[in-house]
Length: 349
Image (cartoon, rainbow, N blue to C red; front, side, top):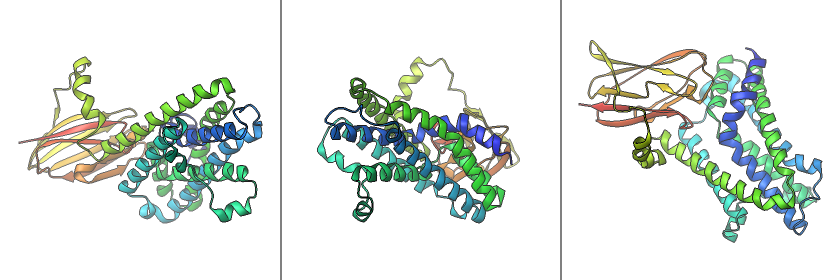
């Protein structure tokens, strides 16, 4: 177990991957803080101190680091028994997307109802923390930081598998701590940069943040729909248009290799794709599906084939085999758990 390599993974590809999925939560923290400051200071948001700017970011990242370290401890202690089901993960992903969308609507003042989506501490906590502004600054970022445990990016899930395989609660905690600590600088730099905006840039930031939140919300919901092979996704809607302007030949699928009474299919899991990403098999003949990875550190390691009940997390270099028999013709999608990397298996007569 090389903790420095795990930290380095978080600092590079892990940070970027996690920011794509969880960045909306941090953006909502900062956007709501800026809105609150503007209201409290009657339009002047230049009075905030550096320590006050850092507070929500530190609370968000601190809560995220703490909850993932605890998760790593229990993963190492109890193994995969406590791992969240795919359905639960996707549910939290969709709820998070809805939260980001509602935050954007609140920033744009679309309707007063969207003001109720901001997290507020319970009244008994408000009595403990007398300063209401400090209470909000501590509570909302912490809650959202804790929520990140329910929407892990693909590389985070790969680290969770590594924590399980460690067989030690201490090792599991160190693995998750090192990885999440590595992702923190990118979150922190981006978060702090957005807090140092002048009033002149505030309105532009609000519009930009709202647009970014809406895009991330749509992306998250669409990714969840892709994972469950929904008939209604943006990819299916715009695929005919994209094919017109694409130079890629997607009309030639890779056929399975029949040996005896079994169709053999091998998918190479790569950092940015599955190869092949269009496979053709025959109905009614058992399929032996083999997944191979070699030095991969991306979401692609978390493989989901919803139609045939396959959900697995490969290690960086790994080989796993699954068996199933296709009984219905049609096109069925496999993807990573985030819906970023995808492929199609077509079942024919």
